[in-house]
Length: 280
Image 1 (cartoon, one colour):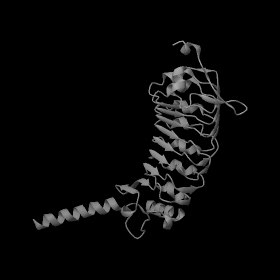
Image 2 (cartoon, rainbow, N blue to C red):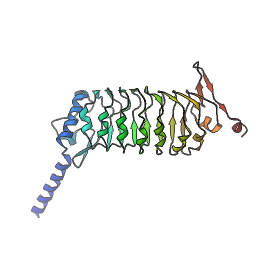
Image 3 (cartoon, rainbow, N blue to C red):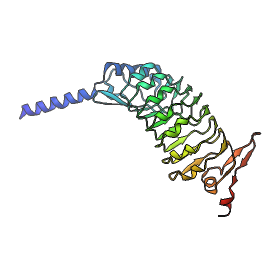
Image 4 (cartoon, rainbow, N blue to C red):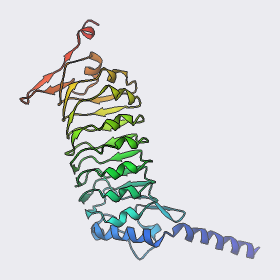
């Protein structure tokens, strides 16, 4: 009996050790991240002399780092290239820190990624086109940074995307045509940028959309009537753009600011409610 108990304990210990072990490459990537972002100043620091399993925010399974959550932990500086050696990551949350620099094109290495949250940092530069290779990505949150440039033209390849939140940046240019192909989008937050151009009737493809915000950009043209057909839409804000024409009463009521637009001189005005809805 004692032998069986001993064997069981040894087996359990072996499994524990196995679960606690990550490759040298992944451990080195974590250590590089720690040093590059001033780990000694983190709110919750790592003791690099202890096992990776004790490091705050690191989740490992079967010897692989699958999640890293260091949100609001006072990370400062630029992300090291070695971060992108964590090729088994499914979730990367570095929200609300002081991370600088731009996202590396090496991000395409994180092919298992389903969540990427780098919101509320000091990121600059453009979103790399290689991000469009993250075929499993469901949640992309980069809001409240200083990101510039245009949205990647092939963003439509992210066909599993449900949340795209890039508001409060300096993103410019037109919406890529491919964005309308992401039929599973539930949340699309593009407000407070420098986007321009117009919306197309392909917006009808966003039937799953629940929250849609373009507030404070430079969009022009008519607002597509197809928005009315988005049956799951609960929150809408298209105000403080340069849309023209008329809108239905239904859309005007759904918009948080009742379709307040800006004219060429920067003066606010309300879009007209179309006659058909006035009579109803």
